[in-house]
Length: 150
Image (cartoon, rainbow, N blue to C red; front, side):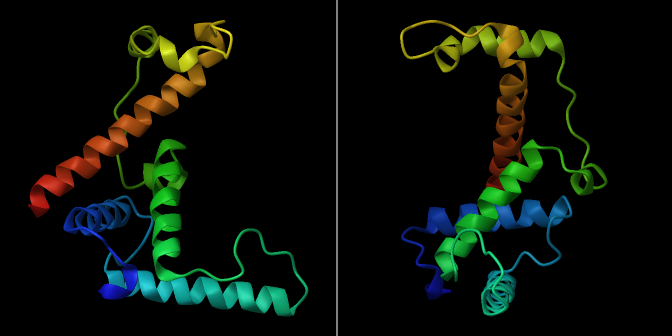
């Protein structure tokens, strides 16, 4: 579908993998690009009506298809990382133990350093470390789907 302006086949495949995973974990019912167009149109109509009613609309007044797709893909990742309840009903997260959190923290100290070289303590960074590990898990799931699509 040319209206999405994929510059490479890899971008298209990545988007399709993310959409397929979003369907698997219950975030969407249809993972086709045509369904993305429908969801974009629906969101744009909601925003148009809200503006007509004098309501506040956060973000854009109207999405283009590429921007809406990027918005959805970002939302899927963030919902996965935040362990939304709807996902917990459709997906079993890998447990993350304290030992794993500390190991990630030690291996990625540069991520937890302030501007002047001062370092955050593990206790201060624990939630960020947890979310970074969840983000890696999301990427692993997407890569597994990409392997299947190839």
